[in-house]
Length: 123
Image (cartoon, rainbow, N blue to C red; front, top):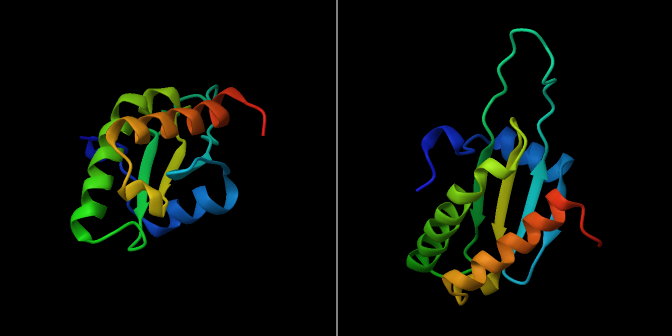
């Protein structure tokens, strides 16, 4: 489970990541990333932690399916949260195909999207 301090909960954070961040899409999900805007050399400033949020609409499936997808995505993000610069905002939006995808497929799609966003992969 993703610890509470790493969860994105406020509407403003979601809006900032989606509107001002970069995005990478895969068949089961879309990842939006707003890199940390803090200056690492500022004296006395401690960088806020990276925060991740998840959007799983009714198009994915019923309540049981949506909650299963959210749990899987939170679990996958827990292992990958350290890849992001401090202060980053990450929003993972599940597409309708995510309800039928298994854990391994979600992991492959998430890794491919993160590689593109963090590694500067080709469009």
